[in-house]
Length: 137
Ligand SMILES: [Zn+2]
Image (cartoon, rainbow, N blue to C red; front, side, top):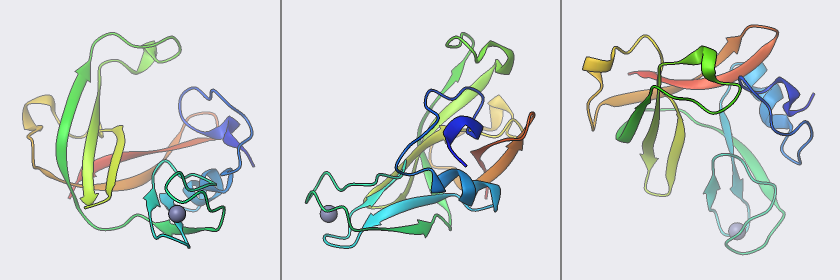
């Protein structure tokens, strides 16, 4: 299974990290970690840009992160117009792991605060597609 099932709009169908979509389907949001230098990546990468190793392992992203920055969109790129309005966020989970994604619609605009605690979770979209989002912890 490839990236054709990821998100509202897929810009690629095949990737070296297709397993990300299988894991989302199983309810896990995952990144990759370099077995050589230990650097973590999200979105997952098949190769380490730090030490150029291709020896990577998957890990599930768990726990609670802090909201660093966000933006609420009232205009969207082509293909995302039906989703408006939505908020995108940068969330820090550990020293070397900052995650980018959407905030859940369950969080009202007036409730969004810098430093709020968030978890990341897989979600099912219409048409058998999968993605992930941040929810209040
Ligand atoms: Zn590395």
